[in-house]
Amino acid sequence: MKALVYVTLKKTVLDPQGATIARALQGMGHPEIASVRQGKFFEIEIEGMDAAQARPMLERIAEDVLSNPVIEEFRVELLQD
Image (cartoon, rainbow, N blue to C red; front, side, top):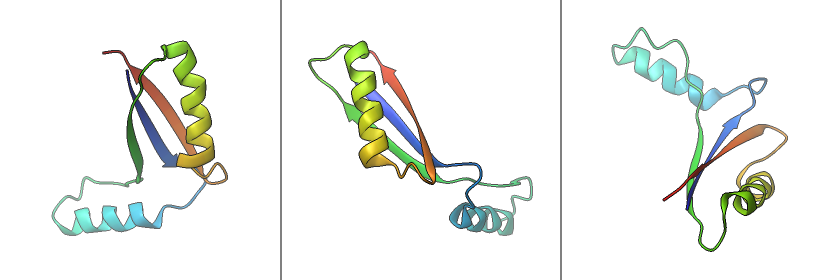
């Protein structure tokens, strides 16, 4: 099974890196880009577990290791082989 974990800044947290990327894209001739929010993406391979076992484990890992829960939120997707 494969898991995808997306970690992004909470909406209430300023994203200076995203703002810089948006300005750069606008300066490169893309005025239609209104804003950018950046984040992190993790692809995790899991063996020997079903989805019911994997999801809580992955959510715990995402909260404890992959994200900073004070300023970030995460989303876990499970893909069946």
